[in-house]
Length: 480
Ligand code: CO
Image (cartoon, rainbow, N blue to C red; front, side, top):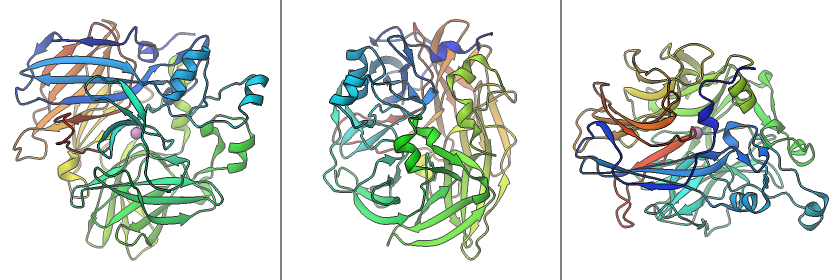
């Protein structure tokens, strides 16, 4: 069977490296003086074994640093426990999203309890004063942002319990605090919603919402006064998780008859102030949310069901047995605070994923622009960038032959007046040249400003953040 043209994006990088002054085609704005740090799989194989799902590979950090129009680069594996055990044993040591670890009888006797993975391959966030790489198990891994060396697991100084979390916390710039949640499975299931002051190591539990079965939620939304958990009807069976021997995500069951539930939780007192229902759908990523005229407006990237998860197994991605689903529908849900039914409108016909906004300026407020990756044809893997004007429904695209772009990160220009005044940074795989480059676009004009070329390819990654400075005293906190 023919292999997908973009298969290099799922192959390991040759090496860890530090590169100075990369070749630039075009020019980088002189004002760009920070660092883009990203995480994602560095390899999807250990010894003779392969991980099964795109979300499973061992994490590798990547950093592009900008100064005086020049760009430096470094990539380094995250030395998590999962990574160290895998390298030591030459095989997959911990179960991941779509892969189980197979242990010998001797291993099971000496270490009978399965350990949760700390392979933090999803996003970069700040925890306290630390730079961390994070995933959906609550074990952020602290790294040195200068060298990308792994330091240790982040230690929370509290007793908030939970086994599952989100890799997309929200940052409240008014309160200078992080909001996020944990899913607690013992003794009863609940969503434990917490707040953590910037630079603190202590999570303050603000609410514990009891549920029969927790839903799989990759992100949540925040407005000025509320947090929103949108429960798609993909529910975890605890019994199955304990005894089935199946990979983590396969212990969730799609129950469309339950519909999707919008839980609106007060940031002030943690109470569920409203709950609304809609037709069943699934999403990984929220885009933005805000309060307007007695409604909560929730923008997200929706799929009719959870089959997108199946579509992102490597077998399906690489051999294209069926059409690949890798981007969804940008929808705006209206959740009236006096009505239990949520309704939606579609904001653009362009498929979109890995959505980003001008977060610091627009999160929790009405806004105009969403940036994301997309598919040029239905059934294609991600092969273009999309900018959507959600007020006018218009869009602009970037694509280039044989090129597969990653998440577009928006960086605002200094003293910007307009929402889209700044640049877009996206790591692109060029399968023809067998390397990757960093694409720099003008976010306003959508013109290409530069391509910064790497001498080798990087596997496709997920999320990253731009930091104006890596100094410990002056860290701009961006959390998406
Ligand atoms: Co994500």
